[in-house]
Length: 112
Image (cartoon, rainbow, N blue to C red; front, top):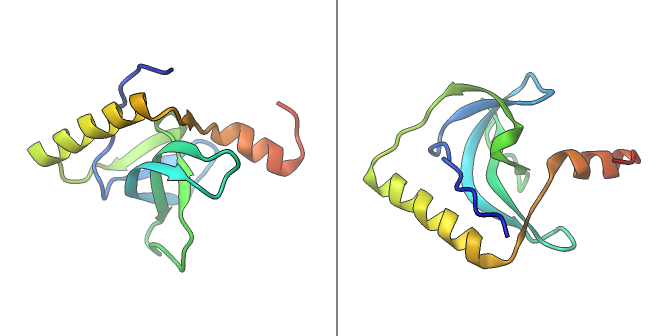
């Protein structure tokens, strides 16, 4: 079980992911992708900036997938408590952290 705590970015933060150029806005943290088999945990849920969420499309990614932080959203004591709660929940959850590179390679038919 992974015990490293993530210093999650606040909601509303804008990032660029590894290998990308499109800005992504962080809409959610501590996401379980139930549509995967088995369901997997991801640090963030986001959408393209400035478009936002279109329909039910949300992209899952992890902290290590972030290449550059463009803007850091608002954080206060409530945000810090939420981050502690997400980290604590994940430690106890039993979910595996999804690996976006492995998922991308599997969908592309690549091994690795």
